[in-house]
Length: 288
Image 1 (cartoon, one colour):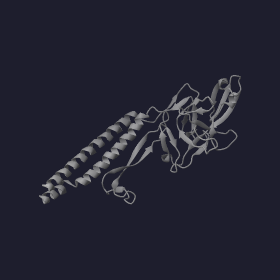
Image 2 (cartoon, rainbow, N blue to C red):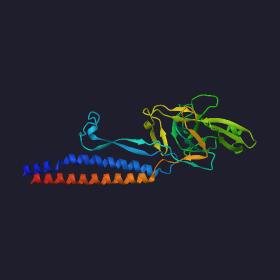
Image 3 (cartoon, rainbow, N blue to C red):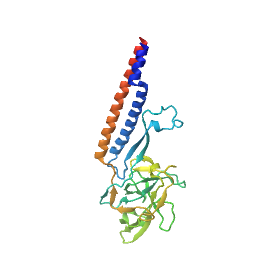
Image 4 (cartoon, rainbow, N blue to C red):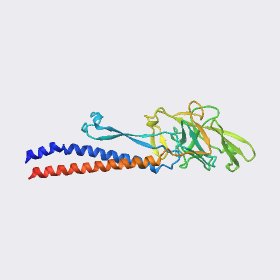
């Protein structure tokens, strides 16, 4: 009986190996579905960039880096990569809506930072701004839009319109942005004052940026430090006033990808179940 069971296993293959391969397939498909779901959930988020899952065969994995993995069995998710293709620019009727055409990210400050501490920045392609009661230009979460001084300097600081308004924000009749990214405030008395230049940031390795939620990303050791600059200069993109960059998610392509990932999940789940039933059958045969 034992020899017959061994012969059966040799004929159909090692169920344990089958289970390992199928299990990695289930896990990879599940993670892929999670990435796709996040893309679909943020399809209408201003400035959002879709992500894709990058997979590798276990056979190509260095066992010294991943001990315990059997070479030649299954697949693993190597990384999740952002796709930084330009989204469509949609014209709006708000002077506080800004969009980047080309390279660069808006720079935002931490509204909860301790005064005098080192600045903590986050970055985004979403320029949907509002004017806070203290004069700061902020995003929907209160992050301050950062700008560069008109007199020079490369350290971004929060863009504040209070002084330019004469201390009374209600006196502001208009806010404008010139082709070089300089923000100006026009008061009711006709006085126009330049405030700051919008600070754009770029990185040596955009793939190294970490996702902080929605369209917000943060700097890491892999991305390298932010390189700040003004719009339309030194390779930075242009900033358009009265426009917003839409997310770059193609809903149709994303749904098709979801169907493929779901099919991969179901197929591997069935293979895992089949392998488990084969092992159970073999154990029951040996126990007789």
